[in-house]
Image (tube, rainbow, N blue to C red; front, side, top):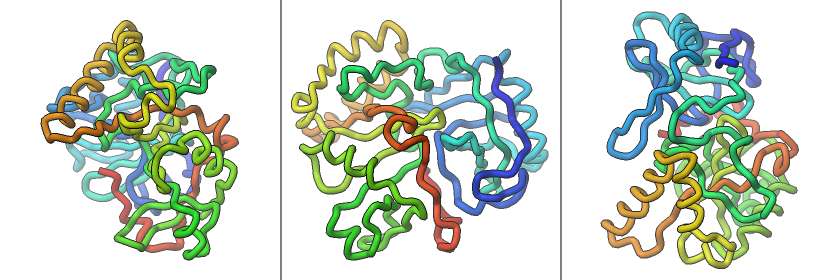
Amino acid sequence: MTWRLNKVRSACGEEPGSPSKIGFRGTRFSLSKANRLYLTDYQKNFTFARDDMVSQFSKDVRAVLSSSWTNARIRIRANGDLYASGISYTYVGNVEFSENEMFPGYLNLNSSYDFRSGVPQIYAGPQTNGHPGEKWTIPSNSFAKSNGRLGNVGIKYERGNWIWSKSSHKDFINHMKRRLNLGGDYIRFYITCDGLVVTPIGQNHWKGYGIDLEQQIINLNKVAPKAAHSVRKRVDLSKSRENENVHLLFAMGHIDDLMGGNIPEPDDSDPRTRGVDEK
């Protein structure tokens, strides 16, 4: 099965080719001038998708964006809605994904992970901060209560001033705070295009959460060597900056199991939402 672009209205009501109402959010990919889909890792290492599986998809994306776009960054939300950044933030269409991994050396699909142990699994996409997915933060209870937002997640706009989700996710918030009870009061997380919930976890908590990083890397290197290299690169970069508490991205589960399949709804009544760029 190939990736397919359906030119349908988005969950937020945008038509293909129209300006985004919710900014630029989701898992990041890029489309080259030659209409090749790729992802970027540390040191500008590019990995191209299998052309036989995405060539028509890439052409269809380009057709919506027009010839005035050259290299285009795109982001795909867990509901399949695809947005592009270039001349403007633009809604392109909705993606149907393949059941096969598209990027050699990485694991982007939920079916490639096994969460039965309950132990966080090292995220097997690029470990770069800008790639994983749609970014949100679970606030402390006191901060959420003071803003009348208990049950909501948000995006920090500036200190003490957040852009909040329109939807409530109390059960998910409680679940994440129980599982990640060794960290602080705020939990940043990403939702990938295939619905994985990914969060950074510091080295000082790996043992407490049952994470055997070396064994996970050994296992990962057998099936996703580029992802294993990305993990090592993030560790090396942290050490070079004299950061003793290395943070790596770990997958916690899938939105169907953690969020009832319901991803946060951006509040398009807040004018700041249109300017969100996860970079």
